[in-house]
Image: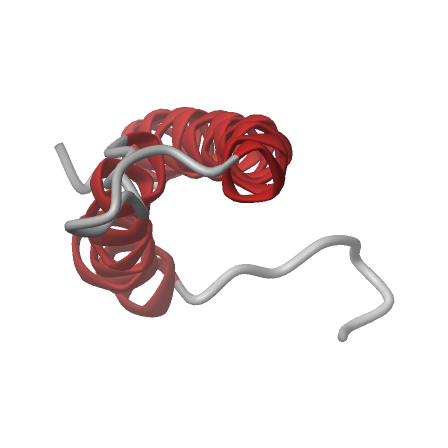
Length: 97
């Protein structure tokens, strides 16, 4: 970094905003769907109270995990949008657009 202040590589920042961050958010989409789908553990013998209890606890756990992943994805998407805006401001300031 120079003595004149903050520096940014606009090409790298643009790549992060357009490729890296969206790819990261996409990687979180798959697990969210799977975690929200609750598959039953009931077999041919019918319901078992112990299985019902475990299944309920597991469903709440996976819902909480999916919610965290969904929130993380939203934060990553917002970061990408903000980074695009920052790159635009820097390009305007440099007379590139």
